[in-house]
Amino acid sequence: MIEQFAPLAWQEEYDNCGLNIGSYEAEVTGILLCVDVTEAVLDEAKSLGANLIVSHHPLLFHPLRQMVDADYVQRVAARAVREGISLYAAHTSLDSAPEGMSFRLGKILGLMDITVLDPRPDGSGSGFGIVGRLPQPCPMRDYLKQVQQRLSIGAIRHSAWCRETVQRVALCTGAGGSMISKALASGADLYLSADLRYNDFFVPEPSMVIADIGHFESEYCAIDLLYDIITKKIATFAVHKSEHSINPVNYLV
Image (cartoon, rainbow, N blue to C red; front, side, top):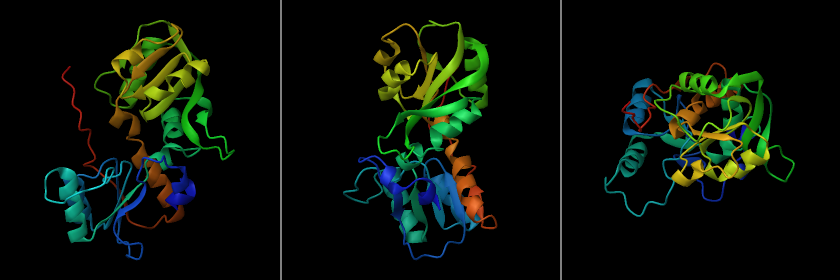
Protein backbone atom coordinates (compact mmCIF):
# COMPACT_ATOMS: atom_id res chain seq x y z
CA MET A 1 0.00 0.00 0.00
CA ILE A 2 2.90 2.38 0.74
CA GLU A 3 4.47 1.53 -2.59
CA GLN A 4 1.19 2.23 -4.39
CA PHE A 5 1.37 5.76 -2.99
CA ALA A 6 5.17 6.12 -3.24
CA PRO A 7 6.71 3.54 -5.63
CA LEU A 8 10.30 2.54 -4.97
CA ALA A 9 11.11 3.59 -8.53
CA TRP A 10 10.70 7.20 -7.37
CA GLN A 11 13.55 7.03 -4.86
CA GLU A 12 16.88 8.70 -5.62
CA GLU A 13 19.84 6.54 -6.72
CA TYR A 14 21.72 7.15 -3.46
CA ASP A 15 18.78 6.12 -1.29
CA ASN A 16 17.75 2.85 0.35
CA CYS A 17 13.96 2.81 0.51
CA GLY A 18 11.98 -0.36 1.02
CA LEU A 19 12.53 -3.30 3.36
CA ASN A 20 15.93 -2.81 5.04
CA ILE A 21 15.66 -5.69 7.52
CA GLY A 22 13.21 -8.58 7.71
CA SER A 23 11.30 -10.96 5.49
CA TYR A 24 8.56 -10.24 2.97
CA GLU A 25 6.87 -13.44 4.16
CA ALA A 26 6.69 -12.47 7.87
CA GLU A 27 3.23 -12.03 9.35
CA VAL A 28 2.78 -8.50 10.68
CA THR A 29 1.50 -8.20 14.26
CA GLY A 30 1.58 -4.40 14.44
CA ILE A 31 3.22 -1.36 12.86
CA LEU A 32 5.09 1.50 14.51
CA LEU A 33 5.68 4.71 12.54
CA CYS A 34 8.65 7.01 13.14
CA VAL A 35 11.08 9.42 11.51
CA ASP A 36 14.27 7.61 12.60
CA VAL A 37 14.75 4.09 13.95
CA THR A 38 16.56 4.33 17.29
CA GLU A 39 17.01 2.04 20.26
CA ALA A 40 14.18 3.87 22.06
CA VAL A 41 11.89 3.26 19.07
CA LEU A 42 12.82 -0.46 19.12
CA ASP A 43 11.91 -0.59 22.82
CA GLU A 44 8.58 1.07 21.98
CA ALA A 45 7.85 -1.40 19.17
CA LYS A 46 8.55 -4.33 21.46
CA SER A 47 6.29 -2.95 24.20
CA LEU A 48 3.47 -2.49 21.69
CA GLY A 49 3.88 -5.93 20.13
CA ALA A 50 4.68 -4.36 16.76
CA ASN A 51 7.07 -6.38 14.62
CA LEU A 52 7.27 -3.86 11.74
CA ILE A 53 8.73 -0.36 12.02
CA VAL A 54 8.06 1.98 9.11
CA SER A 55 10.40 4.97 9.18
CA HIS A 56 11.00 7.95 6.95
CA HIS A 57 14.80 7.80 7.15
CA PRO A 58 16.35 4.41 6.32
CA LEU A 59 18.45 2.96 9.12
CA LEU A 60 20.79 1.35 6.58
CA PHE A 61 21.61 4.41 4.51
CA HIS A 62 25.23 3.36 3.97
CA PRO A 63 26.48 -0.23 3.53
CA LEU A 64 27.57 -1.94 6.75
CA ARG A 65 31.09 -3.40 6.67
CA GLN A 66 30.78 -4.84 10.15
CA MET A 67 28.26 -5.26 12.98
CA VAL A 68 30.22 -4.87 16.23
CA ASP A 69 28.11 -2.39 18.23
CA ALA A 70 30.35 0.50 17.16
CA ASP A 71 27.42 2.89 16.71
CA TYR A 72 23.66 3.04 17.10
CA VAL A 73 23.07 1.91 13.50
CA GLN A 74 24.91 -1.36 14.08
CA ARG A 75 23.29 -1.88 17.47
CA VAL A 76 19.77 -1.27 16.15
CA ALA A 77 20.31 -3.43 13.06
CA ALA A 78 21.66 -6.36 15.09
CA ARG A 79 18.88 -6.10 17.65
CA ALA A 80 16.16 -5.87 15.00
CA VAL A 81 17.42 -9.10 13.45
CA ARG A 82 17.64 -10.86 16.85
CA GLU A 83 14.16 -9.75 17.94
CA GLY A 84 12.42 -10.37 14.61
CA ILE A 85 11.47 -6.73 13.99
CA SER A 86 11.35 -5.74 10.33
CA LEU A 87 12.41 -2.26 9.21
CA TYR A 88 10.91 -0.53 6.18
CA ALA A 89 11.86 2.97 4.99
CA ALA A 90 9.89 5.38 2.80
CA HIS A 91 12.37 8.19 2.22
CA THR A 92 12.88 9.95 -1.13
CA SER A 93 10.11 7.80 -2.62
CA LEU A 94 7.73 9.49 -0.16
CA ASP A 95 9.41 12.88 -0.66
CA SER A 96 8.75 12.81 -4.39
CA ALA A 97 5.21 11.38 -4.37
CA PRO A 98 2.66 13.84 -5.86
CA GLU A 99 0.93 14.26 -2.48
CA GLY A 100 4.00 13.33 -0.46
CA MET A 101 6.05 15.08 2.17
CA SER A 102 6.29 18.62 0.79
CA PHE A 103 2.62 18.59 -0.23
CA ARG A 104 1.62 17.52 3.30
CA LEU A 105 3.80 20.20 4.89
CA GLY A 106 2.39 22.83 2.54
CA LYS A 107 -1.14 21.94 3.67
CA ILE A 108 -0.08 22.17 7.33
CA LEU A 109 1.31 25.63 6.66
CA GLY A 110 -1.87 26.91 5.02
CA LEU A 111 -0.90 26.83 1.35
CA MET A 112 -3.36 26.40 -1.51
CA ASP A 113 -3.07 25.94 -5.30
CA ILE A 114 -0.06 23.70 -4.69
CA THR A 115 2.11 22.50 -7.59
CA VAL A 116 5.37 20.54 -7.73
CA LEU A 117 8.45 22.77 -7.59
CA ASP A 118 10.79 20.40 -9.46
CA PRO A 119 8.64 17.87 -11.36
CA ARG A 120 10.02 14.77 -13.04
CA PRO A 121 9.78 14.95 -16.84
CA ASP A 122 7.96 11.61 -17.08
CA GLY A 123 4.48 13.06 -16.53
CA SER A 124 3.92 11.01 -13.37
CA GLY A 125 3.22 14.10 -11.26
CA SER A 126 6.11 13.17 -8.95
CA GLY A 127 9.01 15.43 -8.08
CA PHE A 128 10.57 17.37 -5.24
CA GLY A 129 9.33 20.39 -3.34
CA ILE A 130 6.17 22.40 -3.85
CA VAL A 131 5.09 25.97 -4.45
CA GLY A 132 1.74 27.37 -3.36
CA ARG A 133 0.11 30.51 -2.07
CA LEU A 134 -1.49 31.80 1.08
CA PRO A 135 -5.14 32.92 0.83
CA GLN A 136 -3.94 36.50 1.28
CA PRO A 137 -0.65 38.35 1.84
CA CYS A 138 0.76 38.08 5.35
CA PRO A 139 3.55 40.02 7.09
CA MET A 140 6.73 37.94 6.63
CA ARG A 141 7.64 37.96 10.32
CA ASP A 142 4.11 36.99 11.38
CA TYR A 143 3.99 34.08 8.94
CA LEU A 144 7.37 32.72 10.06
CA LYS A 145 6.13 32.93 13.66
CA GLN A 146 3.14 30.81 12.59
CA VAL A 147 5.47 28.29 10.94
CA GLN A 148 7.58 28.17 14.11
CA GLN A 149 4.53 27.51 16.28
CA ARG A 150 2.86 24.94 14.01
CA LEU A 151 6.05 22.88 13.64
CA SER A 152 7.39 23.40 17.19
CA ILE A 153 10.65 24.85 15.87
CA GLY A 154 13.22 25.95 18.44
CA ALA A 155 14.74 28.60 16.16
CA ILE A 156 14.49 29.62 12.50
CA ARG A 157 17.57 30.79 10.59
CA HIS A 158 16.69 33.15 7.77
CA SER A 159 18.19 35.49 5.20
CA ALA A 160 17.75 39.27 5.17
CA TRP A 161 14.23 40.71 5.25
CA CYS A 162 14.08 41.68 1.58
CA ARG A 163 10.28 41.41 1.59
CA GLU A 164 7.85 42.73 4.16
CA THR A 165 4.98 40.42 3.18
CA VAL A 166 4.60 36.87 1.87
CA GLN A 167 1.93 35.19 -0.22
CA ARG A 168 3.73 32.84 -2.61
CA VAL A 169 5.69 30.15 -0.71
CA ALA A 170 8.02 27.42 -1.98
CA LEU A 171 9.24 24.64 0.29
CA CYS A 172 11.11 21.36 0.29
CA THR A 173 11.17 19.02 3.27
CA GLY A 174 14.57 17.85 4.47
CA ALA A 175 17.80 19.10 2.94
CA GLY A 176 16.71 21.44 0.14
CA GLY A 177 19.57 23.84 -0.50
CA SER A 178 19.88 22.57 -4.08
CA MET A 179 16.34 23.81 -4.79
CA ILE A 180 16.93 27.50 -4.07
CA SER A 181 17.27 28.39 -7.76
CA LYS A 182 13.99 26.55 -8.48
CA ALA A 183 12.28 28.50 -5.72
CA LEU A 184 13.58 31.78 -7.14
CA ALA A 185 12.39 30.86 -10.62
CA SER A 186 8.92 30.06 -9.24
CA GLY A 187 8.48 33.66 -8.09
CA ALA A 188 8.23 32.68 -4.42
CA ASP A 189 8.40 35.39 -1.75
CA LEU A 190 9.69 32.82 0.76
CA TYR A 191 11.50 29.48 0.53
CA LEU A 192 11.35 27.05 3.47
CA SER A 193 13.71 24.08 3.79
CA ALA A 194 16.43 22.66 6.02
CA ASP A 195 20.17 21.95 6.31
CA LEU A 196 20.99 25.19 4.51
CA ARG A 197 24.66 26.18 4.31
CA TYR A 198 26.16 29.56 5.15
CA ASN A 199 26.48 30.61 1.52
CA ASP A 200 22.88 29.63 0.79
CA PHE A 201 21.73 32.69 2.71
CA PHE A 202 23.35 34.99 0.16
CA VAL A 203 20.29 34.84 -2.09
CA PRO A 204 21.36 35.58 -5.70
CA GLU A 205 18.55 38.09 -6.13
CA PRO A 206 17.26 40.15 -3.19
CA SER A 207 13.68 39.18 -3.99
CA MET A 208 13.08 36.13 -1.79
CA VAL A 209 13.58 35.30 1.88
CA ILE A 210 14.94 31.83 2.62
CA ALA A 211 14.47 30.16 5.98
CA ASP A 212 15.91 27.01 7.55
CA ILE A 213 13.16 25.39 9.59
CA GLY A 214 15.11 22.30 10.69
CA HIS A 215 15.40 18.85 9.13
CA PHE A 216 13.40 16.92 11.74
CA GLU A 217 10.81 19.66 12.08
CA SER A 218 10.15 19.72 8.34
CA GLU A 219 9.82 15.93 8.17
CA TYR A 220 7.91 15.03 11.32
CA CYS A 221 4.74 15.10 9.20
CA ALA A 222 5.92 11.77 7.73
CA ILE A 223 4.35 9.96 10.68
CA ASP A 224 0.85 11.30 10.04
CA LEU A 225 1.24 10.89 6.29
CA LEU A 226 2.26 7.22 6.62
CA TYR A 227 -0.54 6.65 9.14
CA ASP A 228 -3.11 7.97 6.66
CA ILE A 229 -1.71 5.87 3.80
CA ILE A 230 -1.78 2.64 5.81
CA THR A 231 -5.05 3.05 7.71
CA LYS A 232 -6.90 4.06 4.55
CA LYS A 233 -6.29 0.51 3.29
CA ILE A 234 -6.43 -1.45 6.56
CA ALA A 235 -8.43 0.62 9.02
CA THR A 236 -8.65 -2.09 11.70
CA PHE A 237 -4.93 -2.96 11.80
CA ALA A 238 -2.74 -2.01 14.78
CA VAL A 239 -0.84 1.05 13.54
CA HIS A 240 0.92 3.19 16.13
CA LYS A 241 2.55 6.63 15.93
CA SER A 242 5.84 6.61 17.80
CA GLU A 243 6.04 8.73 20.94
CA HIS A 244 9.82 8.29 21.01
CA SER A 245 10.58 9.65 17.55
CA ILE A 246 12.41 12.76 18.74
CA ASN A 247 14.59 15.47 17.26
CA PRO A 248 18.30 14.74 17.82
CA VAL A 249 19.00 18.49 17.49
CA ASN A 250 18.36 20.65 20.56
CA TYR A 251 18.29 24.45 20.82
CA LEU A 252 19.71 26.74 23.49
CA VAL A 253 17.64 29.92 23.18
